[in-house]
Image 1 (cartoon, rainbow, N blue to C red):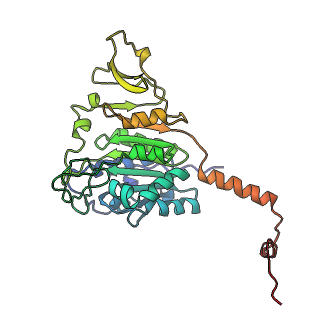
Image 2 (cartoon, rainbow, N blue to C red; image 1 turned 90 degrees about the vertical axis):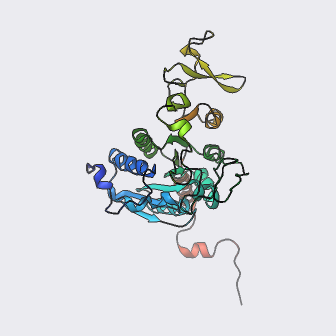
Length: 336
């Protein structure tokens, strides 16, 4: 008989530590969104772990009343992988930023996505190094003036979504940092997904990159500048819900429903569960409107399932019954 999971509230996941982020930072929204999402996941508080790297966002584990670790720069995915493989029953969350994951942690980032371990990765993207006081990061825009590029950044940025899908990510979502209900729901869906889930949050840095996403996340413009994708629903957006996406000459095109004979039946329907990531790549690269919501959610075999299947196969076909059988197998040498 299964033991019923205790009913929690967000207060159960709130630690006694003083939250030390700059006033107005989206990190507060993301933190509270996670604390409100966890009670909906049906997991015991003692089975939740947050592993962070280095950066402003990486203070996250201190503020969660769960197990956690503030680890080293860029290495949180490696540590989190070890935690999950050592205890598969845990709900493991990686907290990282664009500098932590895209630069020094780039290799760890792409390989955790490639392996598809059953854990979750939350990427706080503010297009700047905030903790070290405003240097350009791997997601900073060309021409962006920062403390380390006073005349403008000359390096083209990474797109976290493109990089993730190129590395084989099975789950990718993107959301603005100022919509707590949507953030919480995406966290719940990420938890449900079996495999590595990646959630990119477009997070404003009020000190060193203020307003970096205001042209797409501000309340006055977001309905016209974003398309919030939902599986199985038409790709429609706009304040009047009269804009949509169609495929024209292998490119996504914005059309107006009711003009030039366009009807809702002409609008593409989002399929986040499609194995082929071609459409998901196109959505990730779309500049207008910016695609948010769950862009990709393809159910695939996890690393744990592959490892368990291989272990069972090897055991079933093994001739070894004791350690000596292994030691004296293959090529051996006798010293006389």
